[in-house]
Length: 156
Image 1: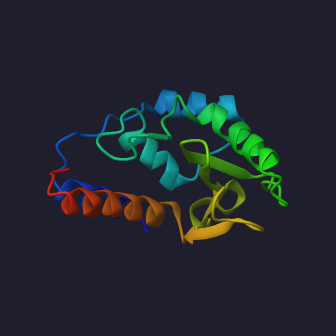
Image 2: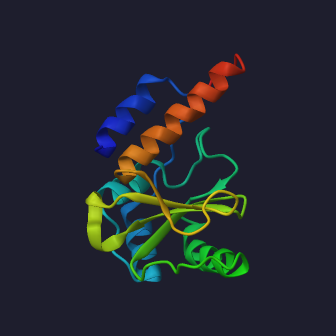
């Protein structure tokens, strides 16, 4: 799914908090710091929402300030849990929640990379593909967030 569709979904839901974008210079500096080239959809995401949680993914680590440490934290989590697999060399860990679950894409696959998850209480022998693309994953997260708030009778 293209990030443009996800933006349209977000805008159509009329969130009370609006995204704060990263600047192109911030994204370029982050790529240089990490020694990676982000996929187009991920770069577009950062340029749309890279500096502000804007009501979604609130308790999670995924902002530009979080990214430099996420892969190392993921590796440590795998080691601590004696997980039998290692992260692929081109894994880009872009999201972590509360220190026990993380997601990643494969940089070599660009926008065509599935999103893989490690969940310390669910995944026992392999990484689980949970979305076809980063855009699909983000769409799922926004939709789940809104559905959860609706179930509590709250506005998002």
